[in-house]
Image (cartoon, rainbow, N blue to C red; front, side, top):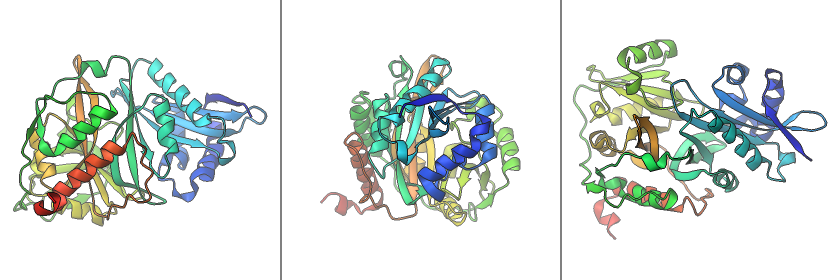
Length: 379
């Protein structure tokens, strides 16, 4: 069968919902494939490139892929790649991925597109790699789909972006294994970066507990914009906070994108600065877990040693490195994904391709250094 690629239309929403159900059942945790209002907004809002593959005879969509963008950000996300089980021969997933990414980059408004890929099989990993995506890391226990699953992070860059990276002089030593993996995965040379000893485990800060969690999306977004009026201080692409965690003594406000359905949480920003949560992350994790999220991640500049040290000292593990993620002036700056999970990590069912193996090794080394006694690590 020859499939015809064409943009998604509003009148396709019912058929697309059925497609995502046929592929994922009730376990798909993304509203793109289940919420008609979200789907309509993506199709008509001008901030997404949504392509479908249709049968030549009936015109019904049998595959779908989206590159989602947002105003003011030069980063896109490949989401919603789905091919009907009856049409998985002939490289349709790869063809659709190539086409939707080409459309997105052709606008000239994107520096990179990233994808978070399930690792239940190697197939999706090969699809993105064949289309120019490079492996950036692993996020264990990142999402609830068919049980607790891990995700792999990949990114594809516009021409010339990686060559204009800003240099980083020093990083906490617990990040060195991740940087070594990026040398293999992305081809970036970090050999001149100085490792700084990772500081000891944080003590609990007096006055922070109990953490109050306010889950009122409209209020939280207004408050977020009041606290961060400068767009340059808000950087967590394609995430908007819907909850805020407040220290009992008012010492900080941590803004979060909380998703109980996927059992995950992204810490989008901390006011007055990321390091303000020092000594309070244990209490913060407890509050988030009670709200239904077993996995928490945050995104920090590779050059922000102070903030990295705070999260590393509180049990967060370096999971992925996103080189040249943010453009400031004529330079691009590297970012790190740090994550923490309250559930036992089990890689036995994960299909980790050879390209991701260095990142798996880096994660395991960092996790062991964080959670195992020193004499156990040195054996």
